Length: 80
Image (tube, rainbow, N blue to C red; front, side):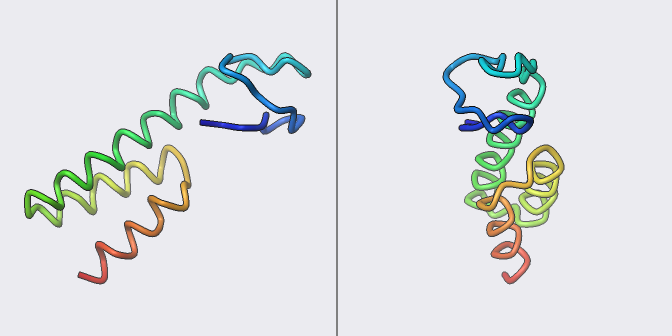
């Protein structure tokens, strides 16, 4: 989950509106959650032996959120 507002860098709590600058962060938070779900899905596909599909799904995850874990997984998948 986002810890700081990408606009003003204020600390965020469990809300979708920044308490400092009042930016609505609901769409970025949804994208972040979607990326996380896709990351887990790619791991499940890898476990099922579907490497090609796992790579496609991790690429989708990275399009939603350039997360370091997803980037490392992509590198790992492509090294296999």
